Image (cartoon, rainbow, N blue to C red; front, side):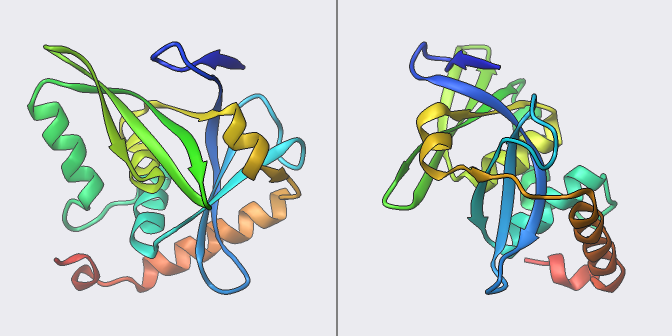
Length: 174
């Protein structure tokens, strides 16, 4: 399902979070997949992210309880308190291996677009139910064939559940 971005620019594809995984070096990767493709078919867009962002995305996806609000929960609360709404997030470009994203807010003063890291934009979108979009040129350049199986997804979920069992409230202080 491609469409032009909110500003009428490049064609974009709507995606969903297909998973959060660890690569061979132990780095966290969020996998974005077009919503109209089934697991194991088409492409996924891997974006390397930090551990805190990975945890935040997984907490939102699993609706796992946390003892105190995480940074992205705070973002959501601030936006809602100001009477604004996140309407969409977009991964807009890739430059020398760095991904760039934007968060579109609907406010009393009209729509506002805010620059963001993709990890923060995705973590926020998963909390507020906003659509996640990727520019076609980004998917063309950085997308990889999807070889994820249901077993892989179940193992990732089990790994996250083990993490939640072992995490302490102090891990979220800051």
